[in-house]
Length: 248
Image (cartoon, rainbow, N blue to C red):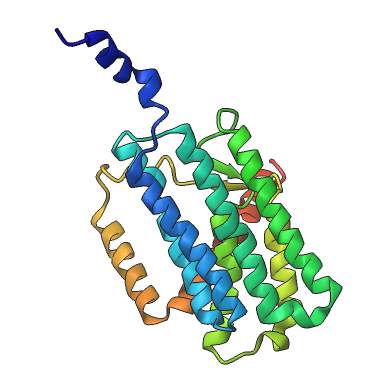
């Protein structure tokens, strides 16, 4: 008779949890690839492609967790791998891209600003991983690293698309970089959208708004994406001011 005990041991949940789920980690690996690709393109002075690669990485990063939840393939390995990939795609890559594009000529102030952004992303990710069960799921504590990366990459993309050299806007680029780095580690709250239910009924006008948003992005992707993420970065401070307004 076959040894059923060995088969039961192989099928036990404790052993199955040690495995690596392929599907969500493929999205994480793709996001990591585009983050690394952005660094390579910045070294080759192809800054528009570097910025686009960061946006693609952001899109893939938003999919891996949702795919894992939909397919019930969440794992501790996937969470750690996603965090490490985020550090490359939304920490190191944006810092190096904007440094190569605009801040290299600023001397020590340029690389200090780039490092400040990079360490801000690392601290933001570490705090997020340790506070998962202690914060309100409706809000992020500090600017999320993908949004900060989109703000920095959007600035590079929109300026490059308008034919404006990075050296011409070196100090504004430094200010945006420092702003993004500090806001990531701040206590400013940002709406997460995690309580938004896609299966819930919405008014017909909501569909029109979504269609209009896609049309605007298609018309001028660099400008519209930069404005959207700049608005999101400022929205946290607006929410903070609203909550602290004088009460009647």
